[in-house]
View 1 (tube, helix red, strand yellow):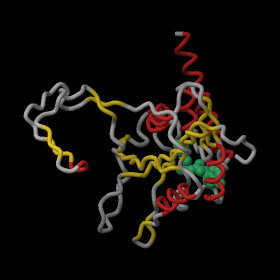
View 2 (spheres, protein in one colour):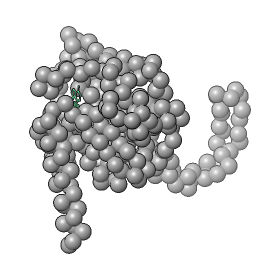
View 3 (tube, helix red, strand yellow):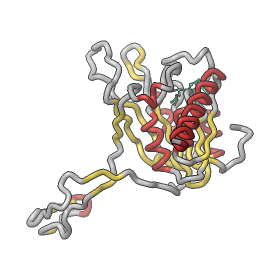
Length: 253
Ligand SMILES: C[S@@+](CC[C@H](N)C(=O)[O-])C[C@H]1O[C@@H](n2cnc3c(N)ncnc32)[C@H](O)[C@@H]1O
């Protein structure tokens, strides 16, 4: 990353090694150096999505994820949104007087005000319903009251910031086999769609099996993937080539 131009990346979508939870062939992970480089290469208004969880050591969560998020703030990033990646099918755990761990954080950080947001919309449960006669109290503005809501409930609304995905079961995620901790392709596509437009440049500086790159490629964005392991870089390359040859095949059929 040191060789990259400053202010050149629209979105960095990445997931670091979690507290040495898994050993990536013994490589070290200089978090602060990497964080500063990500900030330097991010465009004004660009976004970093940092997908991370904590290890539990001797019964206590490490809290590394929070420390990292606060460090990003210290070096200039804006903590735009703390999102949750909920797993539909989490790995079963041994019961240790705690609830099953079913999520990871997705810290969305921006360099200044976010320049691109294409929000994912979902259907409203009560679309079209007229809430006549409902008393509405806006506590943040004191004791304002409204006799009724003026408009019927909209058809769609912006999705919430807890996103749920099936992990490792879909065919597209099987391609990442050989890597110990890929995130779902659907998660990567949702972030690429949300924070970039076609032709933008997406970076994953710890790309593993290349999920972010594969998503960026599919969605017509440019991408750069880096991993300290040449084996994982090779896995990522093969994954993208497979996608490309399948798309070409489909186009000729
Ligand atoms: C959690 S995995 C990323 C998985 C990826 N999101 C995917 O979907 O396959 C973290 C990756 O960071 C890589 N890594 C560890 N230390 C690194 C470093 N110092 N520089 C670059 N990559 C590193 C590991 O090899 C590993 O592939």
